[in-house]
Every structure is written in structure tokens, then in C-alpha cells.
Amino acid sequence: MLVSLKKTNNSKALKQLKKNYKQTDAYIHLTYAERFAFIREIADQVGSWRHARIFAECIDKVFFDPTKSKLSTEDQAFEQVISRFEHYMDNVSHSEDQTYGLLIHDNNETVSKKHTELMKRFHKQGTLWTSIKHIIETPLYVNSELTGMVQIADLCAFALRRFFENQETDILYRIMPRFDSHRGKMVGVRHFTEPTCQCEICSSHV
Ligand SMILES: [Zn+2]
Image 1 (spheres, rainbow, N blue to C red):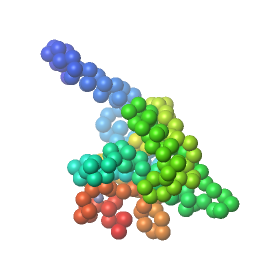
Image 2: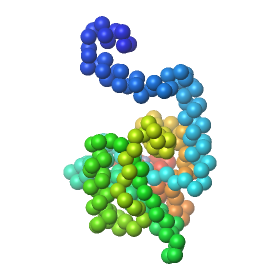
Image 3: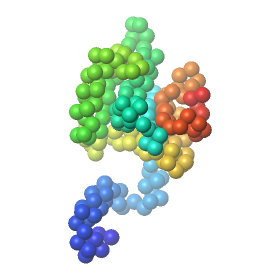
Image 4: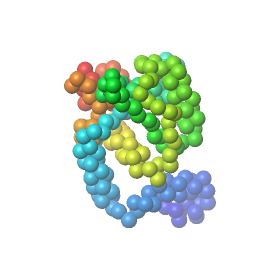
């Protein structure tokens, strides 16, 4: 593929392709089946972490109306996840033994400034859903290539994406036990889509 693009001198496509392949450099020695087996193994590990909780906002962009919500998809997702994380820590806190958390975020220049500002606002005014009493600081931005837990968060996002876009349940079911639930209701993960959606995530909110 690289060769044929070089021949046609399509420099823009070549640049994009090189960029895409750069991300798979570390895995190129594995076959597709081996890569998937590796992902399954990590997902099983995550599923077994009894003290871990997963929070996610999965937005169907076809259904999302930015004029209605007055927020971008990234900002809505951020506000939702922050609110659920805060609720979770409030639920596990006791009056004399409070639980605090902080956010570690994949460094992305376009969102880092915006989310820092948003977080400062949430600290002062709260989100649309809750005041913030258990999240300290603004998010810490890290290089995901160097930070294993951020890669694991990416794997969870991948599992959710494959479920919503391709109805694949293999990876999802392995991490699902870690989706936060409260009083028997799964509250950590939301599918933002048409109200008639009958998927497993939407059904578990009813
Ligand atoms: Zn759904």
C-alpha cells in the first residue's frame, strides 16, 4: 500500500497512512487473532478488579443535537462522567471518612484547555447535576503511550464502541461487571441515543 501511494505521489494520503500505521507499530509482530486474544486477556483482568468502577458516556452523534444541549459531544460527555464519578464517591464516603478522587486524562491539546476551564467552573458552580465535593484539582494530562491506565480506559471505550456500532459483546461482557451500579441499577454507563433504544445498556437503566 505504501509503495503504490508513493508511486502515485499522493503525499497527503501517504502521510495519513504512515500516521495510522505508526499507531500499530508496537503490535505489528502479532497476528490479528493474537491481538484480539491480548485484548480479551486485558478485558478479563479489568473485569476481575473488584474495586474498580467504569464510568462512560456513549453519544450517538446522529441523535445528538448541539443546539439543544448547548454543549459539544466532548463537553457533554465530560460533564456526565464527572457527575457520575462525584456521585459514586459521595455514595462510598462516610461522614468521617470521605473518599476523594482525581482525573487523569489523555493529553489532547484541543480538549485539555477546555476541560481545565470546565473543571474550574464545576468546582465553583457544580455541574448541571451536582456540586463537586470529592474531585480534587483539574484533570492531570498525561501521554497515553506512557500511561498504562489510560490505555486500559481506551480499551474500555473500544469495547463500548464495538458494542454500539457492531453489536459485539465479546469484550464488553468481560468488563461489564465493573460498570458502576447503585441499588441494583447500572448507573455508570449511559447510551445517549433515541429514547426507544432497547440495547442492554439502555434496558439496564429502566
Ligand atoms: Zn441503547
